[in-house]
Image 1 (spheres, rainbow, N blue to C red):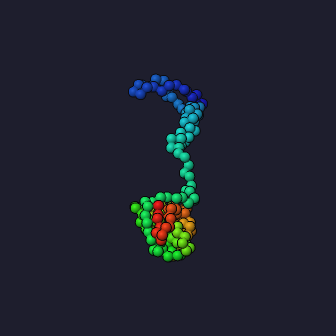
Image 2: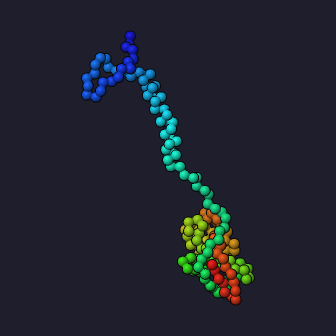
Image 3: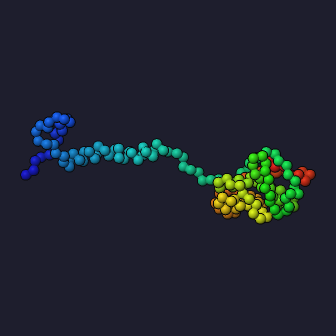
Length: 165
């Protein structure tokens, strides 16, 4: 017959054990698991709470307006149905004339990762970084990965001169 399980306290380290050796049985193991259970359950919650941040918001798909330093260019430089790049301070701006006497301007910063979009042909603009494309008529993104249209830059025309910004 086997000896009964003992819950005797083990001898301190370095001290000689007196009496029979302490045996660990199912009850002792169960107590150890039950004692550790709150920590096991709470640990993932505590760990995730320490790094809690707001969930990332999806990028906006709405066209925005931006300003650039006031710059004047000749309206004659942009024929009907074309777009052209201009510098306005440190910014690059795309100016287009979709219809006779109608001028529009957009920031040349790609809304994907900020590359400078180029005029490809007529009213088609493309970012050299990842191939996002835009329509210079209204600035809308026509080919991914651009998440939204180009930012509008205010433009006004007076006496054959365009004022950007």
